[in-house]
Length: 321
Image 1 (spheres, rainbow, N blue to C red):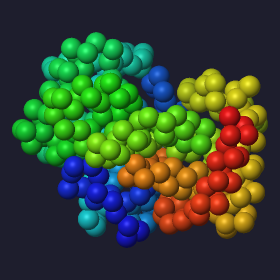
Image 2 (cartoon, one colour; image 1 turned 120 degrees about the vertical axis):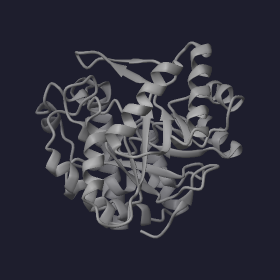
Image 3 (cartoon, rainbow, N blue to C red; image 1 turned 30 degrees about the vertical axis):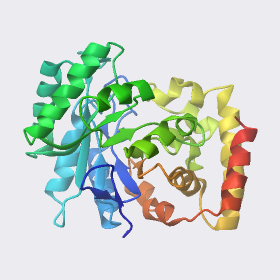
Image 4 (cartoon, rainbow, N blue to C red; image 1 turned 135 degrees about the vertical axis):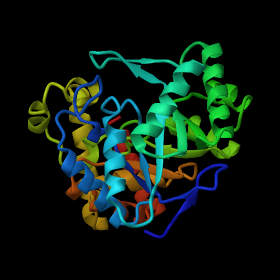
């Protein structure tokens, strides 16, 4: 994969798709994906790197630190150039694995030290606030602390995730924002109304998460498979994976499959390629739990959707909205 895009105001040039490590955090916390084999996780990361993927996105909360540890283990045995590693802070957890949002200076500093230790690095390439808080004073305190960590060299660049425009503006008044990480998919295209245009005009890079709607748009999800998901997989009880939304979402997949037959690609590839067509989007995070799930990561980035393709996909999405 040769194509690389500059991420916002940074010196990071990233592939259109990156490896997402939410699911490899496994079970044991509020938004876990069920039991996960660490060996398969490491092989999946190596498979992505073999395709030329040059960035990995993780977070402290994924598996309560476990995802960061697995990323470190994978990179310790990777002999070639090291990819960029992006991680996030701002979600703390209790003994039951329930998370809460905390953006105080002391909390962020502790989280940064913990992530540096787990990742076995001296500097985080992109450090992001995972979720905002409603208290604007705490939000400002958190972003000011992020800027200080960047000045101290513990983070090369700093960004945010799940911020709205008002929160972005508040942060911008304190320190430049390198990137925003919003959810964006054919199932949840809401970001394209205001958030993505704002980032484009402001020069804020965008790396979208869940472009395949957490597996719904892969073409492999069925009602039977969802019913077999373990109870500790957060998707089992999410509205997108249950009626009345489920039938509409799976109908969208079948229409994408029909379009894919004409283009010679899978619903999964179309779903990712569709997010990349937006000029505000720098890259898309593609999650994987097993090596075979990353085989088409590069292929998705290489798909060039024509205006007629985009119209067909857009009309299909509107039918099931």
